[in-house]
Amino acid sequence: MEERTLKCLGDLNDTAFFPPDWKTGKRADCPVRQVFDRVGDRWSMYVMAHLEEGTLRFNEIRRRIDGLSQRVLTVTLRSLERDGHVIRTQYPTIPPQVDYRLTPLGRSLISAVRPVVGWSGDHHAELQANRASFDGRAGLSATSNAGSHSADGE
Image (tube, rainbow, N blue to C red):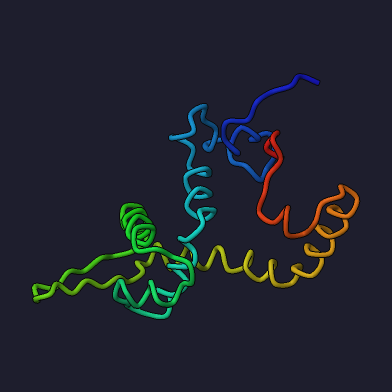
């Protein structure tokens, strides 16, 4: 079998799951990677989940998400706004008031991600047990391996 490198999930278009129009050779042009980059970043889904409850001001979002810095929230909201998931509204007041809300596109993304959130909850104990078993076989402690990756990227 010939070895090949996948640059986009669409490169697997020989199955019915991946339509042929997803095939591309450039990361920037791959629609699947663009969405996965947004869904898979550290903070976007947390921000969007809170905005699903309604319009929020910047500091309200920041207070609701533990560990989220002002700078990272600013970058995350700009990315979500750029993608069209969030609408930013600035009011002409002193001091300026800015609030954020989800767009219909953002709501549809949250709806698409919700099954993965449910799956995570359903399988959390199993994942933890698997990690503990692996770490035990590899001679790793749970705290020393938390969130780390091997040198080969696996």
